[in-house]
Length: 73
Image (cartoon, rainbow, N blue to C red; front, side, top):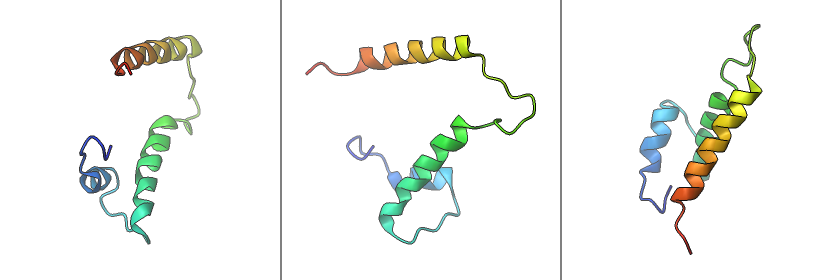
């Protein structure tokens, strides 16, 4: 993200606007938190289910599109 010249401070403030960190390098935890919150969203609902076939298909498609966009070295 830094190499893409993202404003990491602004991105972190969107995720957790009122977060206070003891050390500047702890800001990475805001991004990790976002990933896990998104990953486990709805997990605590009694009727939460994952349709594995659809999930694996979606992962395969996104992986293919990501790999096709990677620069050739």
